[in-house]
Image (cartoon, rainbow, N blue to C red; front, top):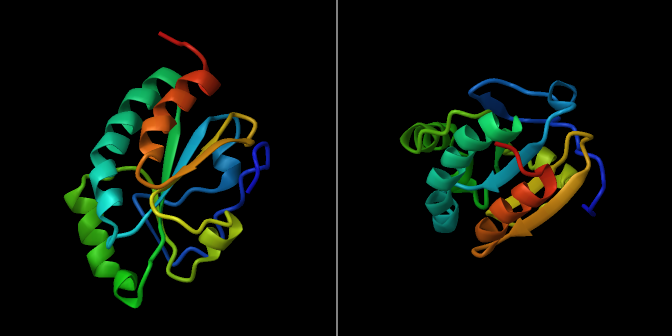
Length: 149
C-alpha cells in the first residue's frame, strides 16, 4: 500500500474476536491497524504498548484500533492458541484472525509487527514494520491527528 491510499475492507476474515468491524463503521475516525502473530516475539512485546495507546488515544483522538493476526506458519493458525494469546495480553479491541491471509493480501502486508495509520477520511498516512516501527507510530499519531487535550 502507498500513502494516501484508502483503507481496504476487512473481507475474508477467519474469525473475529472482540467484535466484528467493517470499513464503513470506521468512517470519520482515525484507525490504527496492527498486524501481529502468536509466534512473533516482537509482536508480543509491543502488545502492552498498543493496549495503552488504544485506551489513551481513543479518548484523546477518537482513535480506533484493529488487530489482524497474520499467521506465519501452520502452527500459528490454531484458533485456540490465538484466542488464548488475545486473552493473555488483554487485547480488548477487535482482532481479525486472518488464517487465509485475505486481509493481509488486501493490505499487501508482508511483515509482523506492522502498523498502518489511517486518518478520518480513511487514507493511509503512515506505515511502519519491524522492531523499530513501534517507536515511530506514536510520533505519527500526534503529527497526523494533531494536538488535542
